[in-house]
Length: 236
Ligand code: OAD
Image 1 (spheres, rainbow, N blue to C red):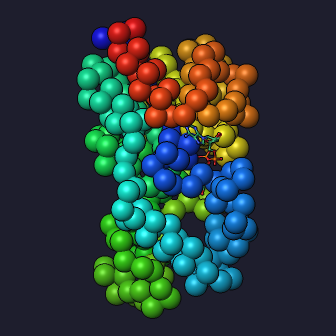
Image 2 (tube, protein in one colour; image 1 turned 30 degrees about the horizontal axis):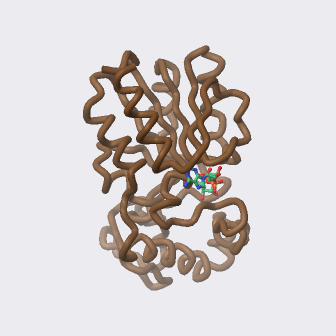
Image 3 (tube, rainbow, N blue to C red; image 1 turned 120 degrees about the vertical axis):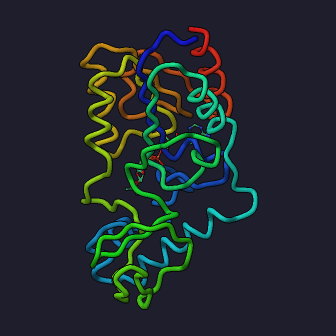
């Protein structure tokens, strides 16, 4: 049984890479082929909504592609969570649904979810896999053309920040998995944990930007190092 009473785990695109979902940065990353300013800001959406909706329609349809399944790293996290007696909070920057599909109880999606959309007129958030178009009608207020992906764009406020900060203030272990540490506020979570003097762990393919703030660092593919780490943590 792990001795930690409250654990916070942060995940990023690297945990889903071996499931076949593109990461964002680096050669072959999503941002190498698409300009953030044209597809991932509210200004881009205001200027050219069709282009932004199509970009996210593509991301959504990727999720339903055959072969996109949770991998050993997602499964190891879910299994650990179910067995762990103390608090366990999974915070993800990912907009895919692989943590849920692996059995994680209630991952907090700080950057939103591809599986949901929201109406900018009545603010209703609802599950939807349908392709969004300029004519899409909100089933709640019946307004057309105001339904957008439930995604946090650059310059927008991430979700669940209050709950995340509450847990960061009392956790006794912080683990970061598969994130490059480029995007705040998530990139700053390790600073909070480090300042509190609690153990901090980085599991990634390569050192992230916040590397020096992690007490324990393990580098390799998530499907290998994540199951290994959590198996050991169970008996720690
Ligand atoms: P990045 O694409 O910036 O970083 C992914 C990290 O995963 C890199 O450090 C890779 O080395 C690592 N990685 C790649 N393959 C891996 C593997 N098989 N096993 C382990 N690690 C691997 O993705 P994020 O840090 O998640 O936000 O990006 C943060 C945010 O920036 C995203 O949520 C998104 C993006 O712009 C929004 O769209 C708002």
